Length: 133
Length: 134
Image (cartoon, rainbow over all chains, first blue to last red; front, side, top):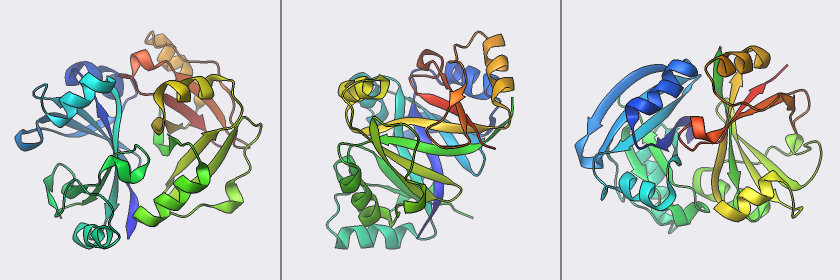
Protein backbone atom coordinates (compact mmCIF):
# COMPACT_ATOMS: atom_id res chain seq x y z
CA UNK A 1 0.00 0.00 0.00
CA UNK A 2 1.54 3.28 -1.17
CA UNK A 3 1.11 6.04 1.42
CA UNK A 4 2.69 9.17 -0.02
CA UNK A 5 5.49 10.65 -2.09
CA UNK A 6 8.48 10.16 0.18
CA UNK A 7 10.84 12.25 -1.91
CA UNK A 8 11.83 13.59 -5.29
CA UNK A 9 15.46 12.91 -6.25
CA UNK A 10 17.36 15.63 -8.13
CA UNK A 11 20.77 15.00 -9.73
CA UNK A 12 23.23 17.89 -9.30
CA UNK A 13 26.88 18.52 -10.10
CA UNK A 14 27.66 20.36 -6.88
CA UNK A 15 25.69 19.73 -3.68
CA UNK A 16 26.87 22.85 -1.87
CA UNK A 17 25.99 25.05 -4.84
CA UNK A 18 22.51 23.48 -5.13
CA UNK A 19 21.87 24.09 -1.40
CA UNK A 20 22.25 27.80 -2.03
CA UNK A 21 18.98 27.69 -3.94
CA UNK A 22 16.99 24.92 -2.21
CA UNK A 23 18.03 25.73 1.36
CA UNK A 24 18.99 29.39 1.33
CA UNK A 25 16.61 30.86 -1.28
CA UNK A 26 13.55 28.54 -1.12
CA UNK A 27 14.08 28.24 2.64
CA UNK A 28 13.72 24.44 2.91
CA UNK A 29 15.14 22.79 6.03
CA UNK A 30 18.01 20.29 5.57
CA UNK A 31 17.22 17.44 7.95
CA UNK A 32 19.95 15.05 6.84
CA UNK A 33 23.13 15.16 4.84
CA UNK A 34 25.28 12.11 4.20
CA UNK A 35 27.63 10.28 1.88
CA UNK A 36 26.44 6.84 0.80
CA UNK A 37 29.43 4.97 -0.59
CA UNK A 38 27.59 1.97 -2.03
CA UNK A 39 25.22 4.22 -4.00
CA UNK A 40 28.05 6.51 -4.99
CA UNK A 41 26.40 9.73 -3.86
CA UNK A 42 26.74 12.64 -1.52
CA UNK A 43 23.16 13.61 -0.61
CA UNK A 44 21.11 16.18 1.26
CA UNK A 45 17.48 15.67 2.30
CA UNK A 46 15.29 18.74 2.60
CA UNK A 47 11.82 18.77 4.14
CA UNK A 48 8.94 20.00 1.97
CA UNK A 49 5.55 19.53 3.67
CA UNK A 50 5.17 15.80 4.32
CA UNK A 51 7.67 14.93 1.58
CA UNK A 52 11.35 15.58 0.89
CA UNK A 53 13.64 16.81 -1.82
CA UNK A 54 16.80 14.70 -2.16
CA UNK A 55 19.75 16.44 -3.80
CA UNK A 56 22.25 13.92 -5.18
CA UNK A 57 25.82 14.63 -6.17
CA UNK A 58 27.70 11.65 -7.66
CA UNK A 59 30.99 10.64 -6.02
CA UNK A 60 32.33 9.48 -9.39
CA UNK A 61 31.37 9.76 -13.08
CA UNK A 62 30.74 6.00 -13.38
CA UNK A 63 28.18 5.86 -10.55
CA UNK A 64 24.48 5.64 -11.59
CA UNK A 65 23.87 9.34 -10.83
CA UNK A 66 27.17 10.26 -12.54
CA UNK A 67 26.07 8.46 -15.71
CA UNK A 68 22.67 10.15 -15.53
CA UNK A 69 24.33 13.59 -15.34
CA UNK A 70 26.52 12.83 -18.31
CA UNK A 71 23.56 11.61 -20.38
CA UNK A 72 20.87 14.10 -19.41
CA UNK A 73 22.44 16.84 -17.32
CA UNK A 74 21.12 18.15 -14.02
CA UNK A 75 17.45 17.72 -13.19
CA UNK A 76 14.72 15.44 -11.88
CA UNK A 77 16.18 11.96 -11.34
CA UNK A 78 13.59 9.78 -9.59
CA UNK A 79 10.42 9.70 -7.52
CA UNK A 80 10.19 7.67 -4.31
CA UNK A 81 6.91 6.41 -2.87
CA UNK A 82 6.60 5.44 0.78
CA UNK A 83 5.07 2.06 1.53
CA UNK A 84 4.56 0.27 4.84
CA UNK A 85 6.06 -2.92 3.40
CA UNK A 86 8.62 -2.61 0.61
CA UNK A 87 9.24 -6.40 0.72
CA UNK A 88 5.61 -7.16 -0.11
CA UNK A 89 5.49 -4.46 -2.81
CA UNK A 90 8.55 -5.87 -4.61
CA UNK A 91 7.15 -9.42 -4.36
CA UNK A 92 3.85 -8.26 -5.84
CA UNK A 93 5.67 -6.47 -8.69
CA UNK A 94 7.76 -9.57 -9.41
CA UNK A 95 4.58 -11.63 -9.54
CA UNK A 96 3.29 -9.17 -12.19
CA UNK A 97 6.59 -9.49 -14.15
CA UNK A 98 7.40 -5.80 -13.68
CA UNK A 99 11.11 -5.23 -14.43
CA UNK A 100 13.04 -4.29 -11.27
CA UNK A 101 16.50 -2.94 -10.54
CA UNK A 102 16.38 -4.37 -6.99
CA UNK A 103 14.92 -7.87 -6.57
CA UNK A 104 15.02 -7.53 -2.79
CA UNK A 105 15.11 -4.42 -0.54
CA UNK A 106 18.44 -2.88 0.43
CA UNK A 107 19.34 -0.15 2.86
CA UNK A 108 19.22 3.37 1.41
CA UNK A 109 18.89 6.94 2.64
CA UNK A 110 15.11 6.65 2.92
CA UNK A 111 15.15 3.33 4.84
CA UNK A 112 14.74 -0.07 3.19
CA UNK A 113 14.40 0.68 -0.50
CA UNK A 114 14.02 -0.87 -3.94
CA UNK A 115 14.16 0.63 -7.44
CA UNK A 116 11.94 -0.36 -10.35
CA UNK A 117 13.42 -0.39 -13.83
CA UNK A 118 12.56 2.89 -15.63
CA UNK A 119 11.16 0.99 -18.62
CA UNK A 120 8.39 -0.20 -16.27
CA UNK A 121 6.97 3.29 -15.86
CA UNK A 122 7.20 5.33 -19.07
CA UNK A 123 10.67 6.73 -18.47
CA UNK A 124 10.18 7.60 -14.79
CA UNK A 125 12.63 6.01 -12.35
CA UNK A 126 10.57 4.83 -9.37
CA UNK A 127 11.89 3.97 -5.90
CA UNK A 128 9.85 2.38 -3.13
CA UNK A 129 10.86 2.92 0.49
CA UNK A 130 9.87 1.82 3.95
CA UNK A 131 11.47 4.12 6.52
CA UNK A 132 13.29 2.44 9.39
CA UNK A 133 11.78 3.47 12.73
CA UNK B 1 8.83 33.01 1.55
CA UNK B 2 6.77 30.19 3.00
CA UNK B 3 6.70 26.84 1.20
CA UNK B 4 3.76 24.68 2.31
CA UNK B 5 4.28 21.39 0.48
CA UNK B 6 5.01 19.47 -2.69
CA UNK B 7 1.71 20.12 -4.45
CA UNK B 8 2.15 17.80 -7.43
CA UNK B 9 4.61 16.20 -9.82
CA UNK B 10 4.03 16.69 -13.54
CA UNK B 11 4.85 13.71 -15.74
CA UNK B 12 4.90 14.04 -19.53
CA UNK B 13 3.36 11.05 -21.33
CA UNK B 14 2.56 9.97 -24.88
CA UNK B 15 -0.88 8.74 -23.87
CA UNK B 16 -2.68 9.65 -20.64
CA UNK B 17 -4.91 6.57 -20.53
CA UNK B 18 -2.05 4.09 -21.06
CA UNK B 19 0.13 5.86 -18.49
CA UNK B 20 -2.69 6.06 -15.91
CA UNK B 21 -3.32 2.33 -16.28
CA UNK B 22 0.40 1.72 -15.81
CA UNK B 23 0.57 3.73 -12.55
CA UNK B 24 -2.44 1.76 -11.33
CA UNK B 25 -0.73 -1.53 -12.20
CA UNK B 26 2.59 -0.55 -10.60
CA UNK B 27 1.65 1.20 -7.38
CA UNK B 28 -2.14 1.20 -7.21
CA UNK B 29 -2.70 4.89 -7.98
CA UNK B 30 -6.11 5.78 -9.40
CA UNK B 31 -7.30 8.67 -11.55
CA UNK B 32 -9.48 11.17 -9.75
CA UNK B 33 -12.18 11.61 -12.44
CA UNK B 34 -13.77 14.56 -10.66
CA UNK B 35 -10.63 16.63 -11.15
CA UNK B 36 -9.99 16.08 -14.85
CA UNK B 37 -11.44 19.33 -16.11
CA UNK B 38 -8.55 21.76 -16.46
CA UNK B 39 -9.13 25.16 -18.05
CA UNK B 40 -7.92 25.81 -21.57
CA UNK B 41 -6.67 23.16 -23.96
CA UNK B 42 -3.58 21.96 -25.75
CA UNK B 43 -3.13 18.85 -23.61
CA UNK B 44 -4.94 15.95 -21.97
CA UNK B 45 -4.47 15.69 -18.22
CA UNK B 46 -5.11 13.09 -15.52
CA UNK B 47 -4.68 13.60 -11.80
CA UNK B 48 -3.68 10.68 -9.56
CA UNK B 49 -3.89 11.55 -5.85
CA UNK B 50 -1.15 10.24 -3.54
CA UNK B 51 -0.96 11.31 0.12
CA UNK B 52 -1.54 15.07 0.19
CA UNK B 53 -0.02 15.47 -3.32
CA UNK B 54 -0.84 14.10 -6.73
CA UNK B 55 0.78 13.00 -9.96
CA UNK B 56 -0.37 15.00 -12.97
CA UNK B 57 -0.01 13.09 -16.24
CA UNK B 58 0.10 15.44 -19.20
CA UNK B 59 -0.17 14.46 -22.86
CA UNK B 60 0.33 17.17 -25.46
CA UNK B 61 -2.54 17.37 -27.94
CA UNK B 62 -2.02 20.68 -29.75
CA UNK B 63 1.25 20.69 -31.68
CA UNK B 64 2.28 24.11 -30.42
CA UNK B 65 3.13 25.94 -27.23
CA UNK B 66 5.75 25.75 -24.48
CA UNK B 67 4.82 22.31 -23.20
CA UNK B 68 4.76 20.72 -26.66
CA UNK B 69 8.17 22.16 -27.57
CA UNK B 70 9.75 20.84 -24.36
CA UNK B 71 8.02 17.48 -24.71
CA UNK B 72 9.46 17.10 -28.23
CA UNK B 73 12.91 17.72 -26.82
CA UNK B 74 12.71 15.66 -23.62
CA UNK B 75 10.18 12.91 -24.30
CA UNK B 76 8.29 10.97 -21.64
CA UNK B 77 9.29 11.30 -17.99
CA UNK B 78 9.21 13.57 -14.98
CA UNK B 79 8.64 17.04 -16.35
CA UNK B 80 8.37 19.44 -13.42
CA UNK B 81 7.40 19.80 -9.79
CA UNK B 82 4.79 22.10 -8.39
CA UNK B 83 5.46 23.61 -4.97
CA UNK B 84 2.66 25.16 -2.95
CA UNK B 85 3.43 28.52 -1.37
CA UNK B 86 1.34 30.51 1.08
CA UNK B 87 1.62 33.82 -0.80
CA UNK B 88 2.63 33.70 -4.46
CA UNK B 89 3.25 37.43 -4.87
CA UNK B 90 5.45 37.51 -1.76
CA UNK B 91 7.37 34.43 -3.01
CA UNK B 92 7.98 36.01 -6.42
CA UNK B 93 9.15 39.26 -4.80
CA UNK B 94 11.47 37.32 -2.49
CA UNK B 95 13.00 35.27 -5.32
CA UNK B 96 13.52 38.33 -7.51
CA UNK B 97 15.24 40.08 -4.60
CA UNK B 98 17.73 37.16 -4.73
CA UNK B 99 18.19 37.71 -8.49
CA UNK B 100 16.26 34.55 -9.41
CA UNK B 101 14.24 34.82 -12.63
CA UNK B 102 10.53 34.05 -12.12
CA UNK B 103 7.64 34.42 -14.58
CA UNK B 104 4.75 36.78 -13.84
CA UNK B 105 2.03 35.04 -11.76
CA UNK B 106 -0.86 33.81 -13.92
CA UNK B 107 -4.01 31.70 -13.63
CA UNK B 108 -3.36 27.95 -13.42
CA UNK B 109 -5.14 25.38 -15.61
CA UNK B 110 -6.74 24.32 -12.32
CA UNK B 111 -9.61 26.62 -11.23
CA UNK B 112 -8.83 28.94 -8.34
CA UNK B 113 -5.05 28.49 -8.42
CA UNK B 114 -2.31 30.88 -9.58
CA UNK B 115 1.16 29.86 -10.69
CA UNK B 116 4.58 31.28 -11.52
CA UNK B 117 7.54 29.40 -12.98
CA UNK B 118 11.13 29.63 -11.77
CA UNK B 119 13.73 29.72 -14.56
CA UNK B 120 15.48 26.31 -14.52
CA UNK B 121 18.95 27.81 -14.69
CA UNK B 122 18.55 28.68 -10.98
CA UNK B 123 17.22 25.28 -9.89
CA UNK B 124 19.82 22.76 -11.10
CA UNK B 125 17.83 22.03 -14.24
CA UNK B 126 14.51 21.35 -12.51
CA UNK B 127 11.37 23.02 -13.81
CA UNK B 128 9.71 24.34 -10.66
CA UNK B 129 6.27 25.87 -10.66
CA UNK B 130 5.09 27.78 -7.60
CA UNK B 131 1.37 27.44 -6.95
CA UNK B 132 -0.96 29.31 -4.63
CA UNK B 133 -4.33 27.73 -3.86
CA UNK B 134 -7.33 29.52 -2.40
